[in-house]
Length: 259
Ligand code: MG
Ligand code: MG
Image (cartoon, rainbow, N blue to C red):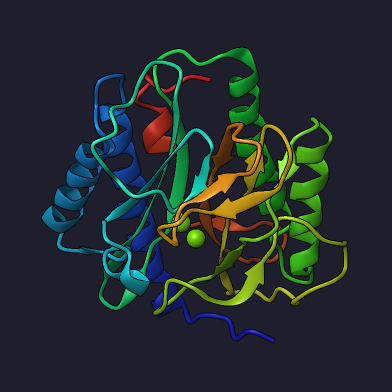
């Protein structure tokens, strides 16, 4: 069993969750055709440091940037670069903060300008699959209940569920136990107890779920090079209903993100 967090620890995780959410919204405001992913990284790093925190991705296992920018067929862990976003792309932005020894970690896949109908569907279903998982993040359930909910929802639309990567606990370390797979069986896996803090992060493919690791050892691509989407939130396991520590409200209330 994984130990629950104290309410004091949850308070610091809540601070990080909120700053992480606001940083994602700040990046989202800048996502547009003509913008480089390196520019998004600079904006995020400045925003995080201006709020007295540090970007916890920078240097993590040697990761070279403050955020992951994963464009189109890149599922996760894309490096920010001189790549210029163009109309019709999608870009998953994954980032986190560290403040007073605790971590934040969330992700959102932004459409760049107008995207095609299938891609809109992929974004909508991936986002919804995350909330299907969150509904199961309640005391007494198991991680398999979350994975099963995500998987059955995403697959019912014919999309693929990436299995090589998963959600995770979060606390003083960005990645703690338990692993939270996006597939699985009801009633299996780690038991969820009140006060456990976990990140749920479906990675869903438009086509086949098979992926491969790029030569740089980081970027995960779909094998068929079709698009993939990724949404992530941090939640506290509670009795009856999970408590969100991060949110997409700051992004979606801006009104410029629609899919
Ligand atoms: Mg993340
Ligand atoms: Mg994560």
